[in-house]
Image 1 (cartoon, rainbow, N blue to C red):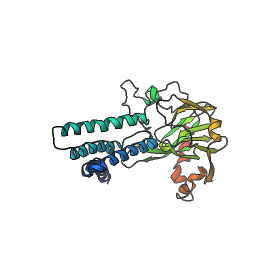
Image 2: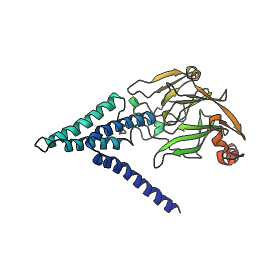
Image 3: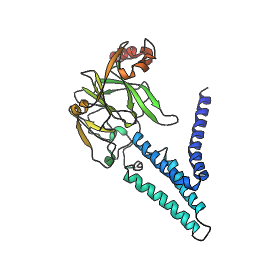
Image 4: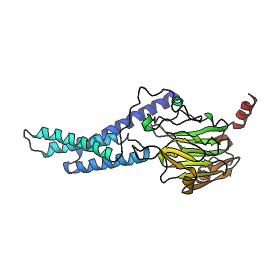
Length: 317
């Protein structure tokens, strides 16, 4: 059964990758010359949308490559059959690629940097001076890594040495990397929709737990003292670096900008409040309540299976 599922998943991945290559190239060949500039423009817009949502460009790169080829194919069809035809086609192809690269830099969409051979292999070795159990990787100018944490459902760790955290679910893209992670804090508080490309931060006194919302759509601040979840969508960080009891340091969507520091109180003042609601012995954000209730009236077996038994074993050891 496992081998069968693995085979179909592998076959599906191959077919999906093949379609992602074949469809853009087919359009590049079949489109009439007058439609090639429109195809090129739409591909550029798609790149901008993907970068604004994910902070990187992967899927639409093939579409942009095919659109550049479409410009060259259109030039080959339009130019007269003379000695200048193929030099003109080459010039059109080079111009399309060069214009795309210039616009990417102008619009703030840099290409992903390859991992440096000098970068430590151990993720926890980066930013060794951090006070936190799960430090973020360094910022872009410090060879920041965008690799997702190797966390699986059921994994446990601590923040600040005393806040217990359990991974409830890791949501993955179809044939892609993890997208977001649901955490359980202190075996009772659910923090859903945390970005899988970053890790949790905790203030030194343990009051605030902070995460990036999935896809970098904002910043999530959980106030353990007030038992309130805050979501900041405007002028929020999409990558966090460090925090203290009063402020956060991180970077936003703009590239080539030094790290910015923001006061937690100022961020909370403009945040959307998401109160926690009691369900069984757990507390979940109100925005997530409808999804949680689908698990049934007793969600212990789904949300934290064998939590009490394992906690008892941990205390005895």
